[in-house]
Image (cartoon, rainbow, N blue to C red; front, side, top):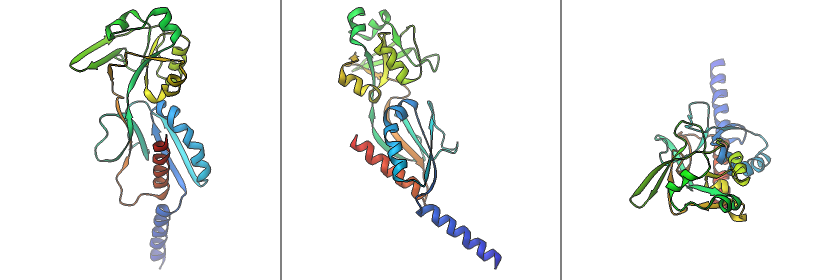
Length: 228
């Protein structure tokens, strides 16, 4: 009898996990996307679902779902295989500078002109100062340099705003700054390639029975990002 009751209790717990809007969710995303896009939707979600606990991790680089992560947002053109994929949107890399900097140093007309400019890059790897440009059948790998390199998007944007040089950003990071004119895009007719180029991909493990808390978070975020 005890064994039957224990088995029934396990079934009850399992069913509750798939139906109740409660429990913990761990979400990982690149710092830039977490800060510029996801952040504005997190507090409203927590207010709407008070029994769900949310753990956010800012992860730049590859995100491994085996590290106790339920949902990963990746900026990539090579999403992980064998995982469910929801492509949120395409994302491009853009170069921006303040109008004051361009007035002082001039506007580059070709990628090779960047050799005469101060540039702000990520400094995560030894090759982050190499920017790859593509247009039609033309390709240029340009080694840039500058006084300030930082792998935090908002700090890099602050540096660009203060006139330190030309910075590299995802389009969603500088959307508002471009709109209000505090920064200006340069070399817009060239495509920038990097490891973080392609699409915003939401990925999670394939499972026959998804916990309700994960399903409601996924549906909520997809709806909010679509309205963005």
